[in-house]
Amino acid sequence: MPPSGFNSQQASSIESFLESISELLIQEAQAKGIGPVEALFSECANIAAILNSDHAPYQSNVLSLTREFYGALVACAPASFDDFRRVRNSELRTARRAVLDVHVPETNNAEQGGPANRLPAPSRK
Image 1 (tube, rainbow, N blue to C red):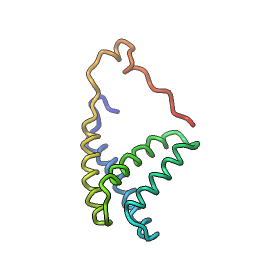
Image 2: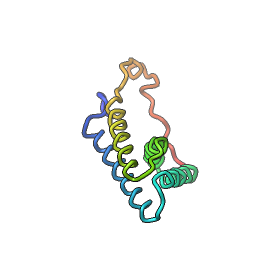
Image 3: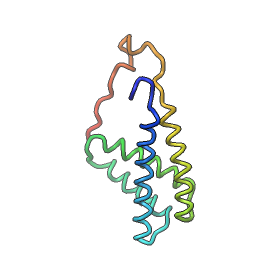
Image 4: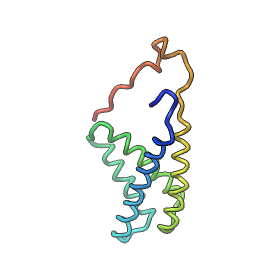
């Protein structure tokens, strides 16, 4: 993360990713003849199964982001795909704001070798 936090271009990239995967989910659901809530539940179950099994580095973070986004959509219980897109667009704005609101706290921990200076151990399953 840049020292000043994330910028608009980076937030747009995440927003674009989430929009893209949700649009593909709509297409899959329509092809299978299932509704938006069923598709979201199914996808969240698939993500949980992957997270509970062996997976490559970086996958857990991307899958967790996806699951969090889909979970927010499920909570709104979109009754139709038009509702899905409306709710999705609202959640995309929320996600974008959340990314832009990430800032590095001002602390002396890095200078003192405190927690801010320690990298987490890589997650490898």
